Image (tube, rainbow, N blue to C red):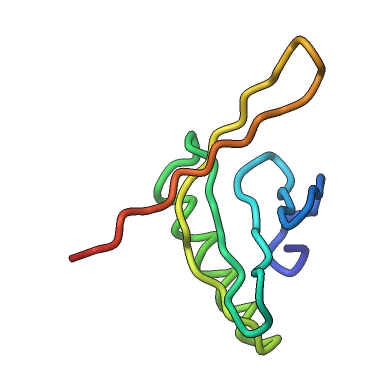
Length: 94
């Protein structure tokens, strides 16, 4: 993330959120699988595309794979001060 100008601001389980809540990375369940990029549902497509390209290039330099997996939304749960993350996977192209 730092190589493309973002900081990791929050990590939970297999998710790492980038600064400004632009995108997050989900680490794979199994070795050899690519990192999965999810973009905030409010992120403009041009910005998402630029970040995706930069991230994928940096991942390749480190012999890692990375793929765009979809978008996400965060909802604050005011009752218990937790957040709820909803993943919205991209539909496969036919």
